[in-house]
Image: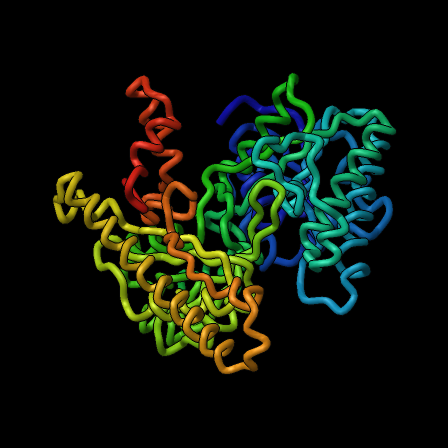
Length: 485
């Protein structure tokens, strides 16, 4: 234990994060006053009294977020205040009254008590990374900073009440502290994971436990998330409190993972647990058969373009799902396994894209297997890829010919006077291949390792190594072929 330090206050001391913060503060030598709704509730506070140093340096005080002045006694004479208390979030028919107002007014009540304490040095507010990331105007060229905030309008429209409550509460805290000369620092953790000292699990811990027990319905909506260990978050609070040069807002996160990456890691580490292997497949039968049966929608944003990516099943048994997805889309990414080549599903997907007049792009996946697994030479790998692209283009030519012949039959069957040249213009057959790497609609990828390229990127990369012009190299690679690796 470090030397004995001053007294600090932790609001909502029995909570998931606050309990760890109290533990770390005690181990660091602080005297801690913790606020709880009922200090006499043994079930809620017993774990706090078991902490090292608690009997000597922990004091629990009753306080309520919605009672003006109820934090005065706890905060008076404290050098620092760690405000972690937040309303318990649950399904609500009146989110404004049950979630938003307690979060905002509760924070302001704590800060009003802080204002009345002449001994106060600094306030640390636990906010959330959700106050940054709920927005629809991301620009990959502009990093987020302390001036970045979630969109209040978007939170309201999508009914993301947790993010909205955290955003409005933090903004209210900054306004109050700036107007009253209070030194405020906010900590914005991402998704907090780690063991719970309290016997009651918070919503975060409950979602993680559900993932480990096979109840992954809630967790699948988290998508790509930042994660951080709860002990690191507690230590981060103490660090910014003690560092006199600290100020502003601090993002606290460790690693960013997709659901599938997280599930893969956990299932390998805990093979006996019923952890789902495929998050986009949320039906029990999909998990059991390891195939997609229902289309799943994934909202994305690329530069200034909002994208709603629909992942339909590739199996022929569920072609109706493919048809529905195609009607809702403006383009299609047609994935073909570079090793296994075309299947009957490929024909079905290409035909549906043709019928719905979608703009398709051909994506050749698993090209790493051609070299690492099949041990093909560069020329053999090239020929394999070239053959695949030729086969796909052959399918598309067949569809064009089908339309061509259908158009000819339709015109020839009409009145002779209507067979002018203007009616024959649309049936002229287009001999150009649909997929050509030089047109930018063919990509070579390894989805497992998260990399890929088109012929332009390939040319630019090797032009710098060879000291050649990227345009000349791209032309040389594409000349006389529809696809070159």
